[in-house]
Each structure stands twice: as structure tokens, then as C-alpha cells.
Length: 84
Length: 212
Image 1 (tube, rainbow over the protein chains, first blue to last red):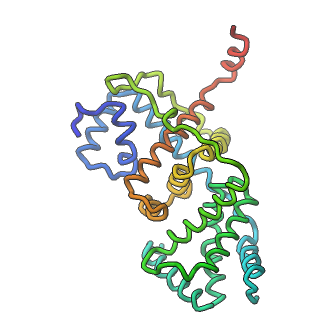
Image 2 (cartoon, one colour):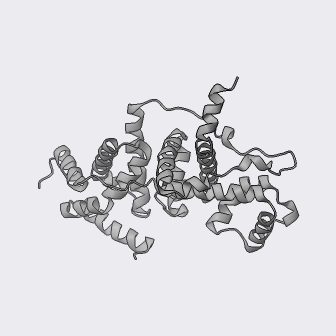
Image 3 (cartoon, each protein chain N blue to C red):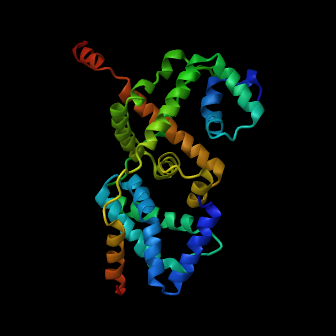
């Protein structure tokens, strides 16, 4: 991937996942960052993309129901006639 | 911290004991996995009562079907699939699915492949405020629920549960490339929907109501 081949479309639709998860080859990463360095729309897009990721991390349930493990054991015992 | 391999070896030990009818091993499995299975189920059902019931279903299936588990595979992949099936089975009973077109939420570009500047406003400021970020997260949960199942699983397991992409790909029985493609499409969808709700200013909304 050469710098002059990078367009916003290619960066956003094809390259962003590898760039963000660190699996992009070094020359490609440099070319992408070169594009980013002079493309305000892509920088803004990347900020929004990362903000989406941060927002999603907040969705993990903060509380597990109390006594869930006990409820599961009781449920399975009732249906399988398991002994205590 | 245990590696994936350590975890799997430890899981397999429990699996073998459960297959031999060792009840304490089953209880240990419940203790080990109940929170993760609940969280995974919650991603599908978005309701704590349903997620708890789906968790119970998953462990019942584990207990009854553990004999069919191929020990050459990773246990968590098998069990997460069991859990997803339990959650989707419950979700289908609850309401019919709504189909959306992800293509409608892919960013648009000029013919030369470059972006038109105003297209890419960000909701970053809001996401950096704790209270607003919580509100956005709740909305994001709703948007994820609109995704087709395959995309919802990918984004929930990678971005919410923070599972390794390789583990998610194995659980979903797809290639890593396919997982990344689904993940990216799902993220673009959620990003665009968040952008729509986060960039509508209150005064702007009022102005629009009185505009001809």
C-alpha cells in the first residue's frame, strides 16, 4: 500500500480494523498515518470511531444477579433430579 | 494470570470430571462461567431476567450434552455457542426480528474516494462526559440490538466483552478476516447511529419544529 493509493474511503472501509488492533504491517501503518496527518475528516472520523469503542466498553453488565450460581444449580437439579 | 491454554486445560479437567458424574466439578464449572455466560446472554437479550433464565438454560444444556463435546476443541468456544443458542432461542420467543440494511450506514465518499469534510462530525465531546457517555452507551445497546445476529455477536464479544478476536472467530466458527469484516461493519453502524443522536442540538430540534 503506497501513500498515494490511500483515500479516505480505503482508510475507513478497508484498513481501520487492522490499524486499530495493531495487526497492520509497518509500511502500511506509516502510509496510513501519513494520510491521517493531512486529512482532518479522517482524523475526526477516527476520533468518532474510537469514541464508539469506548462507549461500547461501558455496556458490559456492571452487576451480575445475586446468587446467580445458586439459581443455576437449583434449576439444573430440579430438571435432572440431581442430589444436593 | 492464566493463559488461554492454562484455562482450557483446567476447563478440560472439569469437563472430564463432569462426564464421570462428579457433581462438585459441575458446581465449580457454574462458579467459573456463570458471570461470563450471563454477560453474553445479556448482550443478546438486554434484560436481566431473560439473561438469567438463558444462563440457566445454557448450564442445563451443558449438563445434558457434555458427552457430545469434542475434547480436541476449546471448551469455552463450545459452551459460548451453547449459550448464544440458548439466548437466541429465548429472544426469538420474545419478539420477531427487525431487519436493517447495514449498507445504509456505511459512510459516503466522493467519487475520488475522499471524504467530504462536514460528513464526519464527531460525538467525542459527549463521550468524554461520564453522564452523557452512560446515556450514549444505553442508546448504543439499542442500536446493537438492531443488528443482524452475526454482527451483534461479533461486536458484543469483541468490543463489550473484550474477548480476543481469535477466540471470538473460533466461537462463531468463522475466519478472523470474516470476523473483522463483521466487526467493522457493526462498528460503522453503531458509530453512525450514535452520531445521529449525539449531534442533534436541543435548540436545533426546536428550530426545526417551527421551520416551514
